Length: 198
Image (tube, rainbow, N blue to C red; front, top):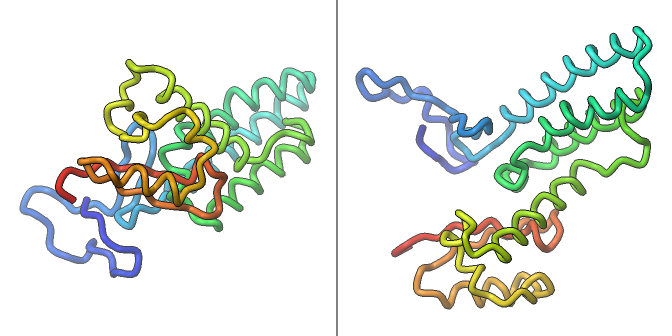
């Protein structure tokens, strides 16, 4: 799969290498990413799976399953599957995809499968980002620690605005590309890719 800009036409119509069919998306560790760094296909799969699981939950409810049991099953299946590896794809999702995920959560709330005051997908994604960054920061043996110069910054970086943080990171010998997503909270605004000789 070749990565192209979002405003460019797809390469699917281009001739592929002999014996190697061209693909417009790739699935890695359960996350489907398109050739334009879109996760719409991944969101489609998540919502389809969530809708099927919702039907199964309604069947269990009709057979007398308690509310507590249904909510536990929902958190362990639909919610876990929906937010799986969210730090890897949340920043690539557009607002339309995120609103579709939120509608799925609202359907679960209306059906009584999760609490009415359950956190939104955005809150869950931000919590996952926070947990990941803290794990990388506090664990010197974390496998992601060597990939990001952010780990050499003091713990107070959590309180640093993105402009200052970006400036600090760019002083490193290995240039870091920091993509700022203004729709997210401060901690999840950074998608850091270390690039040698960028």
